[in-house]
Image 1 (cartoon, rainbow, N blue to C red):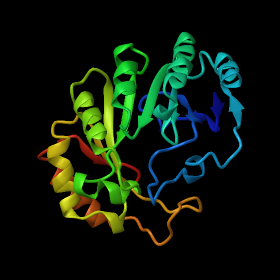
Image 2: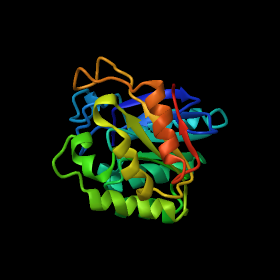
Image 3: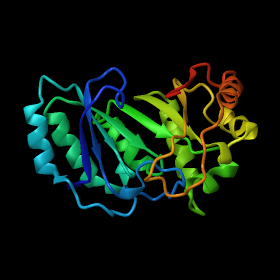
Length: 230
């Protein structure tokens, strides 16, 4: 498997773990605020292959606790992703998977075979604004909802998170999200940060007041709602 990028050390991407972050190219969404837009269509040449990644990890045993697999959308790799995770697990690393939830079949397979230890799933917006925020006319909302329901069952440790952009969110966004993820173990609001790689210009972070108001809207549905990164 081609590896688009590797962050050799992170204390932030995997809660409670010293980890590395592996970036996999390819995504089925086109979020206008994406921070990794260069990974959407395999624009960048691969940084390494899976054999080189595994060689790196063998040298980091005892130094790293876990591996975060992100993208792009990692689950688009299907059984190729599963094979890579099996090799990572054989080296005794914990595995965190970042996903948009559009492959609930693979997500359930990985969890039920004890191949992932933590899942971070993006909630792009309320259902009625999902297509707009994901940047595609048919974002596979039923599949996303299936992934949400599965994670809420608690078979694996998880979090839901939403990148919040001033132009794409309002109070109704969170009044729509709240009932959908009611009772979630963790939910994070992440304010948008502008970067050169963001595909659409003119987007902004919400104000601190808006973020706090939206957090309070979510609290009756998900008491463990926090603002991350402000």
